[in-house]
Image 1 (cartoon, rainbow, N blue to C red):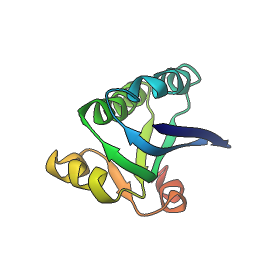
Image 2 (image 1 turned 90 degrees about the vertical axis):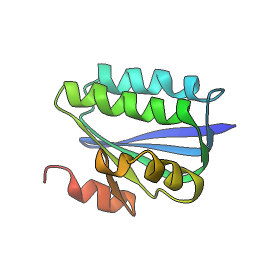
Image 3 (image 1 turned 120 degrees about the horizontal axis):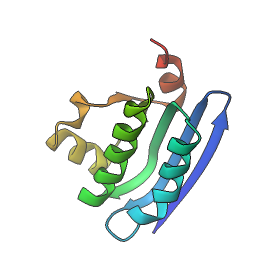
Image 4 (image 1 turned 180 degrees about the horizontal axis):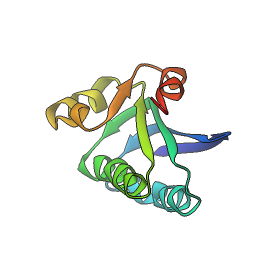
Length: 113
């Protein structure tokens, strides 16, 4: 099961994910990703503090958001990566592609730098 919320704070959007982001749940966030791109929300933080499990489909959804926003001049920060998702990001060497920070507040401070 996946819970996801979106909060817009001025120019920055925080997409919070809780539970499992996998082949069954990744399609649930596709409308959110499509909306962020369509609305040209160029500064997005993905808050993974509540994410317990991620698989290749979940990683693919986050990478898709990253690539689509980058194509229109945007950026994605990853906040509060921990546990199994952190290990998957490490194994896939995604820390080289993403700006990964400890907190949402830290991510917000890094936009525009």
